[in-house]
Length: 104
Image (cartoon, rainbow, N blue to C red; front, side, top):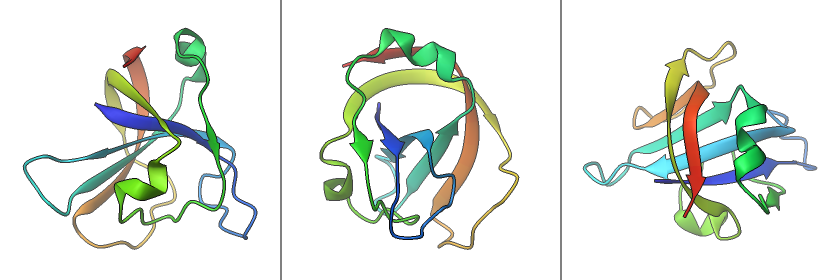
């Protein structure tokens, strides 16, 4: 389970801006946050009303930052990110090629 949104930042934070993101918090690791940038946006046709979030931090530290994102269940294949950012070790950033997605 994760939170899906379209990132549209206007404060100069252009890290993978104008992209769809999935963020999920690892239940077995209190501080772990996984950030996935969606590669194949055509899979999103089955999800309605994906919110656009503005001024989202690159390092999302709280689920409150995602309060308008929609909840989804998803699976996919992860790919290394081309332009990694420096973040705490318990934060991951990867691309995802979705194999399934459904709104919760």
